[in-house]
Length: 129
Image 1 (cartoon, rainbow, N blue to C red):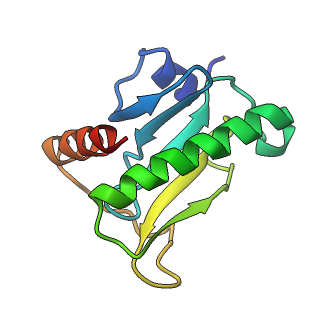
Image 2: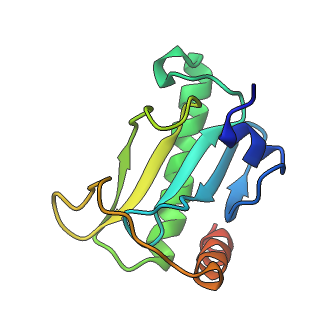
Image 3: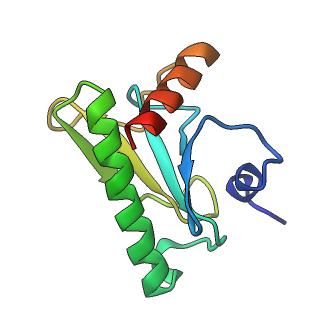
């Protein structure tokens, strides 16, 4: 059975898409821990990040860097943090989270934004690419 991320990539489930290329897909997290928190996923569905082929990991991280640079142009923050947890969804993914100070990534504190705010943010980051 396809993961929720594969369903998002295939367009079966809506998302706040930021960008995609031939091997990666970036979209806003619907349960963000900071404004602009997004996910970069490989289009190939593999559960565990370290089971990905080396080239796919390289492509994913290079694409995440490109997305993070665009986020920095749009979101007021000190840095973009990166983390790989891999427990929530059985599809490898990278979290990019805007940070203002050390210790600000807490996945226990979720924020809420309106649909319009999410759509505008996704468009702003996409334009900054």
